[in-house]
Image (tube, rainbow, N blue to C red; front, side, top):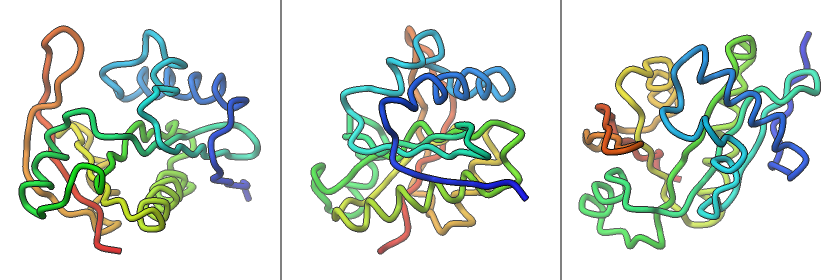
Amino acid sequence: MKSVIVRPFEDTDLAGAASALVEVHTTDGYPVEGVDHPEEWLRSTDVIAAWVGQLDGTTVGHVAIMRPRGEDAVSLWMQQSGDREDQVAVLARLFVVKEARKHAVGERLMQAAMSYGSEHGLRLVLDVMTKDSAAIRLYERLGWREIGRAPHHYGNGQSIDAVCYVAPSP
């Protein structure tokens, strides 16, 4: 049986996480941005907290909680809930390499991020591209609720349809 560990991201995880990110982009087309400079994208100054998932000691997944940067999911949730921006954070940069997906790595990464949000009084939101049906199934299975739809903007004026979600109440 393979050993799965989810733990807080450390600087020494950067190369392995960047490699996993590029692999996921190759197999799934996710993310649509950040692949040209994966280490920079993963270590954005907007990251509040991050975790890696490891399978038998190899980094196979990642998730981050980020400060809001004008995302539609944040605006939608603030309008619907009355929460202030300092009460909301964005779950982002979730990815798991294909070979590790049957080991609940994504679910465990999500649970780590959701626990952090609850412990720090942050309501988590996210947007997910409509093409990423496996991610949508995971979010809905974990109780995330759709709060609207909006384009996900990236690159030089490009966009793709996305669904916005809010985490379940703590």
